[in-house]
Amino acid sequence: MRWLLCMTVLSLASVGVDAAAEVPIADVILGVHGGTGMDKKDMTPELEKFFRTDLERALKAGYETLAKPEATSLDAVETAIRVLEDSPHFNAGKGAVFTKEGRNELDASIMEGKEMKAGAVAGVTILKNPISAARAVMEKSKHVMLIGRGAEVFATKAGMEIVDPAYFWTPRRWEDWKASQAAIEERPKGPLGTVGAVALDRHGNLAAGTSTGGMTGKQYGRVGDSPIIGAGTYADNEGCAVSCTGHGEYFIRYAVSHSIVSLVKYKQLSVKAASEEVVNGTLKKAGGEGGVIALDRQGKFAMSYNGEGLYRGWVTKDGKIQVMLYEK
Image 1: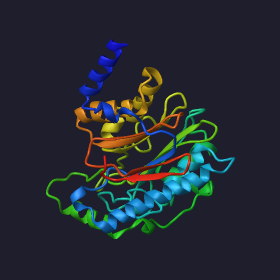
Image 2: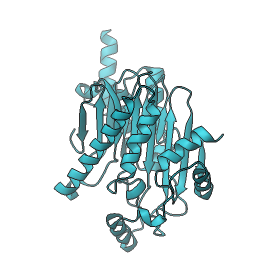
Image 3: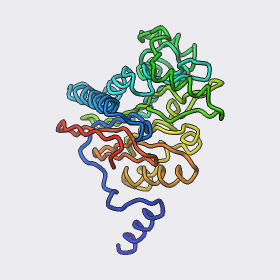
Image 4: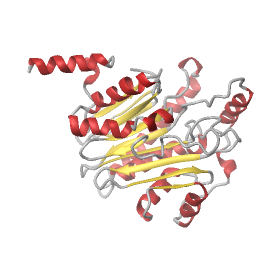
């Protein structure tokens, strides 16, 4: 036993993790994130209020959904993410960033942990709520991922709400795009505001979802980790549910969400320990910036990130809501 304790301490120290921070938050049924956000020095009181209010709205909507007897974790994830997609303050849905060509191309995915079903869309331009389209792919098709025009045609036939591409135009994102065009060094700006959710329903089933507009200035049909199952999103009842945000290329290469689930499922690590090992160990060592939220079937919730902040929040089964931006 003493040997095991020493090995645990050494393992945590090897990735720079404070052992006192290893205890996950308990009794959580829904967690959300709004990305790693902007530099703290650029945050204004007005923007901070918007971010906190929208995260709280998403948590409240998801919690109310879970309170319904027939509700599933998938319902809660979709509901919470739709709230964040409809906000202009996050890089998803209404607030999506612009590509190099001045377009908005959106990605999303969703997965449930009981039967390991999943759905995703990528590179869509007219779907108001990509997360709902991703769920439609999962439930109404034989496929996991649909992209571009094909995804839009499918979603239209499935009854998803269609909008003019101009719907996604926002002044803040347009100014970001103009700045990216004027930059001497051609380098996509990100990660900014990808949204996601993880949930646990009364039946003990987990679900996760992620939605994004990608990186400002992205080009050539670039797709990041958010719609890729095993990279930006993963859920397994025998492990945990994970939603990611960050520099997508790294999250794809290191299969971040699946890696965290595997550490919980096969090595019996806590969701916090598993998240820290991947985010502040593997990912940070490789130079990848970002964060994750993770939830297991016991309601243990973890939030790990290796940047300045992670916009995130959670609600416990008794309805208590907590939102954090840069706070540790």
